[in-house]
Length: 352
Ligand SMILES: Cc1cc2nc3c(=O)[nH]c(=O)nc-3n(C[C@H](O)[C@H](O)[C@H](O)COP(=O)(O)OP(=O)(O)OC[C@H]3O[C@@H](n4cnc5c(N)ncnc54)[C@H](O)[C@@H]3O)c2cc1C
Image 1 (tube, rainbow, N blue to C red):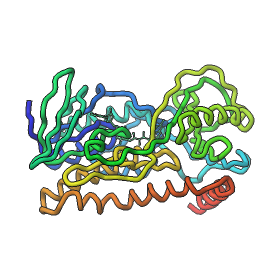
Image 2: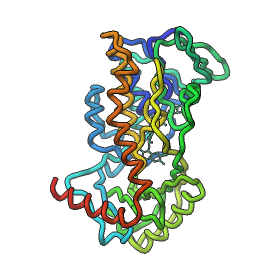
Image 3: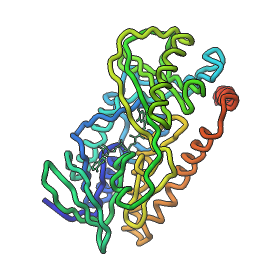
Image 4: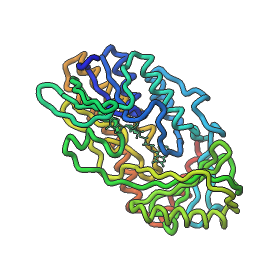
C-alpha cells in the first residue's frame, strides 16, 4: 500500500468528499480516510439550499433525485414566537430534502470515480508536522504511517486533526431530533420555529418519507431535551399535531464556537473548522464550499507557488464572516427581535 500522498483528507462527509474530488481532478494523489463504513449514518435534517448546487456544479456534479427524500423539495415556513398565524412561507424559495446517508455515499462514490484512494474503517490517530506531514492511521487493529504534503481535516465537530493542532476545542450545540408517525396541519414545508420559550436557538419540523421529523438545538444537552418536549406540546396547540408512534430519536452536535481553519499545510474544513450557521443549523453547504476552497487553494499553490494556506484564508473569509454574523444574531436576539426578523424576511421574500 502506498504511504506517500500529495493530499491526505480525513473524514468522508460532504466536506472531505468535495475536497478529495477537486484534488484528484487536478491530478493530485489523494487518500481519503473515513473511520466509519461506506454509507455511514449521520444524524441530520438533510435540508440543502439551492445555492449548494453551484458548488456541486464546480465539482462537475448535479444533484440526482436518487439522493432525495420524499417530498423532494420543501418550502421554508417561518413561525415567530406569536405563532403560526403571524408566520408564513418564503416565496419563490425551496430547500432540497436530502436523504443524508445516500447523499454522502453518492459523493464518496464520485470521489472514487475521480481516482481518490478511499479507505473506510480507517481512523486518524495522530498527526505530526516535521519537514513533511506524518499521520498515524488505524485500520482494523493495525496502525501504519502515512506521509502527505497537505492534510485536509474534514473530520467533523470532534475533529482529531483540530486537536492535533492544539486548537481550542469547539463549543457545541446539542441537536435532538425525533421521527414520528403522526398527523398535523403540516404542508410540504420546512417549519423553522423561533420562540425563546421553547428554545434559545431554533426548532424545526419537516416531512421525510412519510414521517414527521421534529428537532431542537440548545447549548446545554438537558435544555435541548426539554426544548424538544416543549416544542411537541406547542405543536399540538399550533398545528394540531397528533403524535402516534415514535420511530427513532437521534442526538447530534453542531459547532458553536469561533471558526478556526488550521495552519501551515493543514487546512480544516466544514464542521471541523466550525463552519456552520448556528441560526439555522445549516452546515452541508458550508462543508461543500470549504472543502472545495481548500482543494482549490492547494491546486493553486501547486501551480503558482503561492502559499496554499494564504489562498485558503482569502477564499474562506466571506464564509467565516457569514457564520460569525449569524452566530452574533442568535446570541443577541430576544423574542421581539425574532418577531421582527420573521416579519422582515416574509416581506423581503415578497419582493423576490
Ligand atoms: C441533528 C442535526 C441536523 C442537521 N441538519 C442539517 C440540515 O438540515 N442542513 C444542513 O445543511 N446541515 C445540517 N446539520 C449540520 C450538518 O450535518 C453538518 O454541518 C455537516 O455534516 C458537516 O459536514 P462535514 O463533512 O464537515 O462533517 P461530517 O458530515 O460530520 O463528516 C465528518 C466525517 O469524518 C469522519 N471522522 C471523524 N473522525 C475521524 C477520524 N479520526 N478519522 C477518520 N475519519 C473521521 C466521521 O466518521 C464523518 O464521516 C445538522 C446537524 C445535526 C447534528
